[in-house]
Image (cartoon, rainbow, N blue to C red; front, top):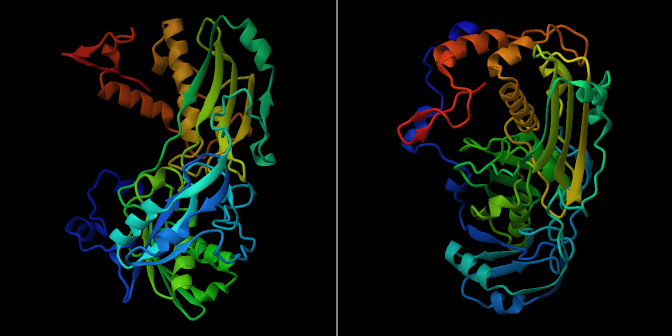
Length: 430
């Protein structure tokens, strides 16, 4: 799309099909002689399975199979790393042992003639655990801190600590962001059908080539033996970049019963098994002289990851070049927890990090009685000070000025909670 295209209406290629219901998503497909699968999720946050009363469920009407770690084949899980996968660790090997690593982990899959039969049987399956207290809070004093890979190393220029100590004005605050889930309208769904040693999938995915390669590696198949179909996708925001355990389970169930199988995750299951924006805690300190020029910036952040994979994101990266400042120090650490692995979500790392930095800048502008737009303009960099190179393009100054003009920035009252429209509070900000 060219600059000349901006502001002009365009018809989406798939728009009519989506709004009229003609578009078919993964769960809309059906295969002859198809069965239905439902995942049973772990009800404890950490521990091991000690008993599964599968026999009671296997005799229920319509039930074709109850697959657990006890009767699941040991899958090859050959090495495979895509660019969107975590830097280190091993993906979850589903139904390969009795260990429960996080709440909501798939611990069984029930296959039946109908969805109702499968849901009823899955709800009836009784599982006993030897459980332990999970560690799920990165701010817990028991949570360890580990350094990320070299690509996310700490950065420093000048002497940020000294500059902050000597600054005429300073804000030093901690900002926390809770875990966020993608929750697109279309749930995750997969249909699997085997034709001999050839596997055909209808699956919700943003990365067809990766899903094909991942499933081939899990089952030890040639990539050419796996076909993935995804004609439409109903939103994802990053959650469908990776190939999650339900895809493996669907293919595993279809091979077990020798018939096509459909599996659709429930909305609740999507909160635990398909990634999330990681919870973060960030300390940001910004100091300025009496003219409003930044003297020092400190940005320290910790984000959660799972214990079996090391998910990293660019949490403090934007801070390195966002403003002109001679003294800066950033630090990023990971906290391995008893949780499912986080995943990329719209502006991964940058969205969380910029929230903390810009919140601190707003607080600094208030402390100095300077308009927040003017404070940013006074600290607009002429080059990328992290790399010492010119920007290929950077039009924030114009954006700030035009936006402030259009939304009435000159009429803004800097006092928090002072602007109202009837009973509604009104806010203006950068």
